[in-house]
Length: 206
Image 1 (tube, one colour):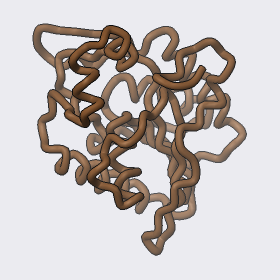
Image 2 (cartoon, rainbow, N blue to C red):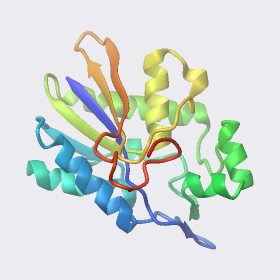
Image 3 (tube, helix red, strand yellow):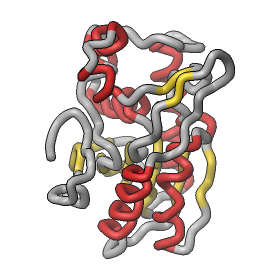
Image 4 (cartoon, rainbow, N blue to C red):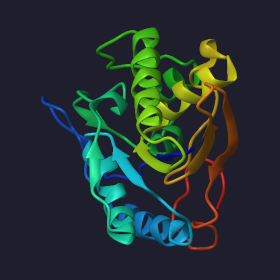
């Protein structure tokens, strides 16, 4: 089967005094999500999963409408900071040289409810469970940068490099998953649908 790991589109910035921020998509994020759905419309998709966080569910919505599929929510692919009371797009952290940007560069993840090892195992088990349900099919999993990093690092046998790359907004990362257990990374960070649109892609690329 082919697994499409897709990072959510650009959400709004939200900083609260208490309670989870869980921001919705920005106007640009909705445009990104619609372009993603159009880009994938020429392919076959048999199922769509999303993290329970609002930015992932909303990104998956145009895709589900395109393929007339429901969005299946999977708690196991939520981001490590799902309960954090703030969400600031990493581009804004970098532009302001915010200390939190340096933490990310150092692979130090704040606001975690679990260890990095626990998070990585939870993500791997959840995605593998999805793979097991869809032999021979194409499945989209709309999730988060940390989730994608954790799973691909495991596939590469580089568990100590959980934050080894930056997934772009609505970037598509394809993995071929065989019934034998073999996993092959086919593409990383596909963003052709955003090129030339003027919409933000992420830290790298225009």
